[in-house]
Image (cartoon, rainbow, N blue to C red; front, side):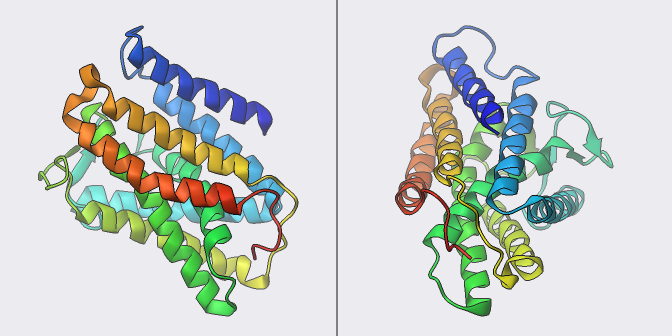
Amino acid sequence: MWVFLIVFTLLTAYSTIVLYFDLGPLFNPLLTPLTTLVGFGFALLHARLRWNWRAALILFVISFVVTLAFESIGVATGLIYGAYHYTSKLGPKFLGLVPYTIPAAWFMMMYPSLVIAERISPQTPGWVRGLSVAAIGGLVMTAWDVVMDPMMVRGGHWTWETAGPYFGIPLQNYLGWWLTTFTVFFVNWLVVHRHNLPVHGQDDRLVVFVYALTGLSSVLIALHPSAMAQISGAGLAGFFAMAPWAIIGWIKTGYAQDTG
């Protein structure tokens, strides 16, 4: 797990340094998929240590199926997120619609969002607990897209076919992000966590660090004056959207106990 965390940190730092010191192209074709897969590996291994392999794999399977299905429907029909399509920059696509790295990217950030949501949600019993974790987790996750989506569109990774009011992105996209995350988290709670799955003594601040680092990297790239001056506002919006969750998550975490 530590190897994945260190490599992820180095790759994320490298991409930011390359931008600020003009050491090469902003978006190396392999850098984004590689960073995503390393971040995915860290999330899966941390989940295994926090719960167990069964729970970690169930979360991954639910996340993979739901996000790939929602994204495929979204690209094919324009429903859920709005009308958009992926370019070839993220690699081979499922049914020619969605790059296979996309579900990995969802899981990479969904897992920290879930941990933060578990930590800050009220310790209520039964269904209320599951609903609150899923609803708050959806907000934590969607905060990342406030800066990530404008940045990736400027990088040519996907294109919105109908321009929306937020840096060319339709507001429907953010409702779709919340709905996707809510669905994954609530289904996961129904399958696994309603049985009060025990949480082992694994440092949850590591995943808060990944959430904050990923967000900070996106914010800095968006704010860079020569590379993406047109989305500096998205960088500021992303900072204020993610910072409260990262700060509260850091305060609430430590060694995981009694998160339910």
